[in-house]
Amino acid sequence: MSGPVVIGQGNREPRPRPLLRATLGEILRRTRLAQRRTLADVARAARVSMPYLSELERGRKEASSEVLAAICYALRIELSDLLAVAGRDLVDNRGRRGQVARLAAVRGDRVPPEITAPPAADVAPEAGDPQGRGPADAVCLLAA
Image (cartoon, rainbow, N blue to C red):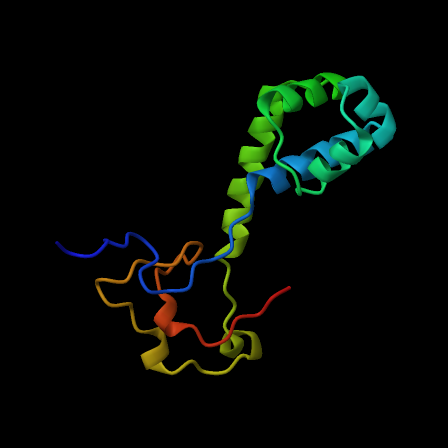
């Protein structure tokens, strides 16, 4: 019997992925603040405790579908809209993770040809890299 088959990342370090609970919490907080409502007001209307709602908004607790529905009702939004926005936020976040800036390009230096060579056939292109260069050509990552 052979070992497990790895699909995708291969031997590269896995990238941190946003948690659904954190994304939902951010959206709930943004919605509540946009409505200029207090945590106490929304918690009371949703019939959950204020500390629990705070934990949900900070992404520290996982809400059941019933609790999410109650909070959405209290915020006067549809659960389906909350989930749609969460899906868009997760997709947008995925696009931001794949952006790479090369130090040589930023400084205007000439990039050596061995760095700009196309990846080997068994290496999948990085997400967000329109030229399809893989991780082997990374010179420097800059975070903003």
